[in-house]
Image (cartoon, rainbow, N blue to C red; front, top):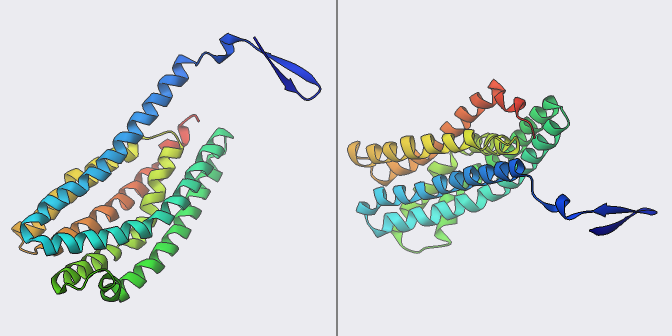
Length: 236
């Protein structure tokens, strides 16, 4: 037995109070598993895109790598805003206020979209100069500029897409964004990238277009699922 001070008195904590609740532990494991699988799906899909690009040579791969590194770096602050929105979702659902949770998501999505829209405009206008700071190779510069400009053109969609996905996670519904990532990245982005790059003859440009389309699709599909409101019935 342990004694904890609380104000002017003491609280008795026995060993049985420290035993984890099996149901709560199972819920944590389930959330962790779905969240981990969600991250694996989105991360591993980049390997598929690299495989599609590989036949076009090292310059295409290098340009893609530089462009996507810059894209990921620019998106990182958006995840901060999205996580803040997810926190508000969990808090307000726990307080029985799904209306405030919904308002918080749309507010976070708006500010994220404004931020990414500004960054996307900078990337679109200055793509050549930005990529040029990392390479002197003309071919790498061409592919990198193309990648940065095309993928950044969808930044207005990405903001809400990221926020919607994190909102589901904040509501304890990790399955919905997991399925969205699986469908949009593996069943849509990779086949579309191969089809545009090889079958349609667009080359690396087809891969870059597929990435922008897939991320935009996640935003649209996520918005539709969010508006249906099933996440409001989750108990946090």
